[in-house]
Image (tube, rainbow, N blue to C red; front, side, top):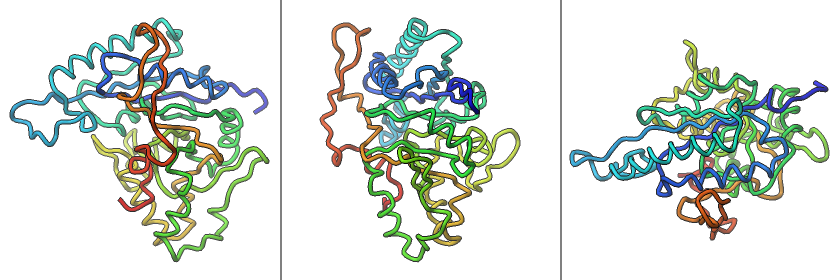
Amino acid sequence: PEEFSLEGYLTVVITTSPTKSNPSTMLVEAVLSTFEQVPGLSQCRLVIVCDGCDIFSESTNKEKLGFKRGVVTRESAEHYEQYKDNLRSLLSTKIAANKAAIIERPSREGFGWAVRTAISLEVRTPYTMVIQHDRYFERGFDLEAVLRAMHTDPRLAVVYMVNSSMRNHASRVKNRAHKVDWTHPAIQPIVVSPELTFLPCFAWLDSTHIARTSHLIKFVFGMRGHPAESGVPIRRGDFPEDRLNQAQIKSLKTEGPASHKRYGTWLLESEKIQVRHLSGRNFASEGTSGARARFILGLSDDDDDEGTEDDPSGDR
């Protein structure tokens, strides 16, 4: 369409959960501050889903204790409650009421169901950008051009922004699927313009991406009384990439390149990294807690922790 309203087409969903940096909101503030790297992104409505957590007790297996598992000490749980209060205050002062929403879950549901809940309760746009609370934009891209391309080409159901582990994605997949016909038209790059190309992505990832909302509803989550079209149900506590990635690689091997159309996953071509991981331990504030965060990453392109977390196309 000629008149293209970004806020009418895209909702941004950020998932958050307990971290060592609680009750400070600096981690989310740092991520939000990088939205300015992507022209128009700050215009879009923001939904933050605060996952619940389980409190560690003497009867709990110590091996289950950990932020990534959603099992925390009582002190950490109290810090998380303070963090959510601080987050509400932050959004009320920084973003108009009709431009932001916070969803609190009473118990731990995990990343997948956090996204599912946001879509069910708050997303009314045809496209959803999914961001974890520790993923920031290092470089921008033409958001409007990407959305226009997705709106025009039904093959583009999911588009990932480049992180450090994705640069060698295709070669890793080819090493695992030797018999695939890599010349098949279903898995050739989609060239929209000299400045905009989409490369086929052969793994479902949880890293920052834009997805057609209907694809998430029908294919991934199977909401509203219908089973997931992927055939792989996302259960409470699941990360979609842990469930869907293996199915996607298996489909590629057994059904061939034509299976890629069903998943609809593509990578926004970029010679430079667009998204990086920010550890709650590796940042500091400037001045008071209301000041802007400054990154202290200490990460190179090859030694950050994205290689295992975001590259399920390789052997794990």
